Length: 370
Length: 260
Image (cartoon, rainbow over all chains, first blue to last red; front, side):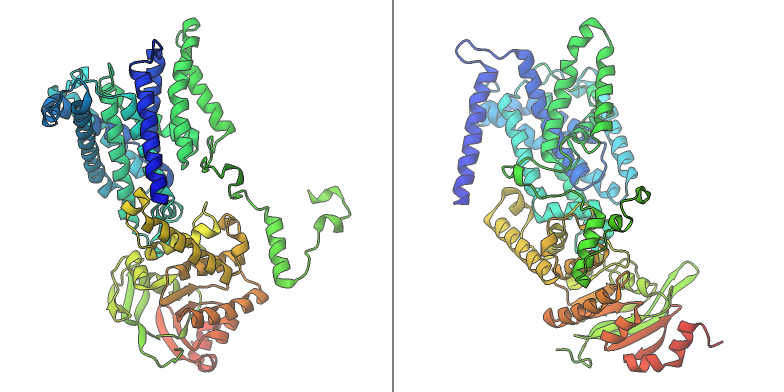
């Protein structure tokens, strides 16, 4: 029963994405989506994958990684290189070409898998030594890793060096972007709601207690890191093969990593729903502010920064806090603080069967109790 | 089951722990029979918590061996020791913050959850079955500890006494053979301590546990422990039943600071 429902849900999602893909990529009956808007929606999809995957490490496991752009670069360049160098051959295996149909599909699938594998390997190599470190050290190591990757790429002429990987074949479509985004959300959500998600949350909360309760802390941190890196690699593969959007080292510097961190902070760190909204807001906001630039050139980024600062001042927990959107949205568990006085009173009653004295009444309502 | 002369569950043999020039535990041997309620007492700084940290793998002994259930466990990682059936509570309560009461207990079922990461990612029937079982077991434990009404509260918001009970419930969720309680009565009023004593005795019988207890509250220790080991400055100074310990001159001297 559950299996059947799941298959139906998968089929419905794929069908919906395929239909939307036609609308976005080629238009329907004279209706054409404005390419500018289509591009923004594509970028939202890629950013959703990045933000939700980073949320697994930074939000759920509580490890502060600043290297997401690095893993995106490793995966992106690998995937793009696979199609540039071997794409035609891979497409030929199924008797197709890179122009479309089964050939392009298989080439894209293989390239994204290669990107995921390369980024996962990078994640493993960076994660094993650095996840033994605590707190800020991981941020420093991952930040350094991202910069090293960027400098290495700058010096490889085969992938375009400083000019970027302009030979990339534009195989990325709306369909691919959103299949990956949905898949990322499902994977991260399923991990988060399982015993593994609780283990990661336990690591975030108290590593010593987590280990004492049987959680293999280092192993799970590395595991989360590897999965997160692999998904970032896929996002890189999508980004690099998007039409007229070649990967280049400048675009993958540490500011890109920080941008993804800001997405999950704005959305509410630890919340998948928050990461999705954060990715949306941070992709749209700088574009929406372009209208300001027409009148006051240069003001756009000032306003952007100001809005982020104001948001953090007035809603430091982010848009969603740690909560998730769900069908039970209206009856979420009450996670607000119990007033201490009230809980102590309840406890006292439970143990002595006596009602605690109301201090205010014994003071006769005087103002001195404040 | 509660035969105090039963086979040994825990056997510490000549364990020494040095931190640089400081010897926190010195040539200590400790034999805890299966099914017993065993007390470990000593004045402040005697090394009781260090012993717990040695047993649970937080520290590695400088010398000596620790055997648990017939296996040598010294030098193993804390999660391995937990999976072998030894769990603890902490002197300074260490609940998982921003988790609910229920989630705290469910987290500790991690060891007993028979599912792979792939099961969880795909959402296989096995995953759903295991999650349901985890939830049911956690609920049962909360009911036993009178915490079921607080299941959805954030654990660290509970009153102190309830947090201590929750820590015991969480430790029991790992299905241990040996439960180490580090000052469970700390911060409790006399009424709460009395309830705690009944609870400890009851869970020992109900879950066929062996319990090793570190406690400062002498009423609790003398009231429930069958055997007591007294340590001072990391060394064993006395061993016996509560009645024997209460009469032991070395113990009285250690606690009252006399004897010199």
